[in-house]
Every structure is written in structure tokens, then in C-alpha cells.
Length: 123
Ligand SMILES: [Zn+2]
Image (cartoon, rainbow, N blue to C red; front, side, top):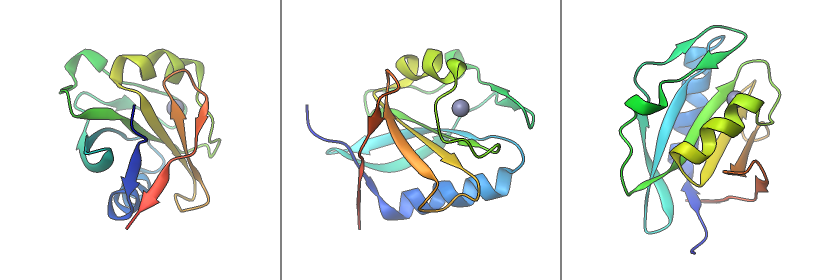
């Protein structure tokens, strides 16, 4: 299994999305090409408030190039919640959580089981 990397522009787009949606969460589907996450698709049917979010996983446009997901934690805690751990395996293998203030220091990647994953950022 090749390592998964992420394009810096896309990561910055995720920071911008987090800021734009704050204090709500956003959820995006991450798409990879040749082992690099380069595209995102915003999840439809997102229902969220400042404390919790529930996503309609069944409505997501999952396909073979889906690498995983990215979502924000407006509370700032960059750690998968119990709900996240249930959602991750349904979407893909790699998952990014971005906490406030949505920058390079406040994001982390995880595997579907919730283990931290040291995702490389490529220019
Ligand atoms: Zn979460």
C-alpha cells in the first residue's frame, strides 16, 4: 500500500474552509491521484451546530479515488470523537481533522481506526 500524501494547496483550502464555516463544522471527501490527495468534494447533507455534527454518509459521492475525509473541530480538540471513529471506516483509509485556528499547527491525519498518521505535505 503506497503512502498517502497531501498537496499543500489542498491543505490550505481545508484551512480556509474551516475558517469560512466556523463555528460550524465542515466535512469534505478527499480524493487522491497516484497517492497524493489533490481534490476535495464537500459532503452533501451536512447537519451541524457548534457542538456536534452528523453527516449523511450514505449520501456521499464515494468512488475508487476516495482517499478519506477531512473535517473541522471548531472546539479545537484535534482528536477523533467516538462519532468520527464510526464514520472513518465508511469513507476511506485516511482522515484529517483540523482544529482552530485552522493552520499548519492545528491539523492531524489519522487512519480509519483512529491511529495518528504522519501524512507528508507535498508542494
Ligand atoms: Zn470530528
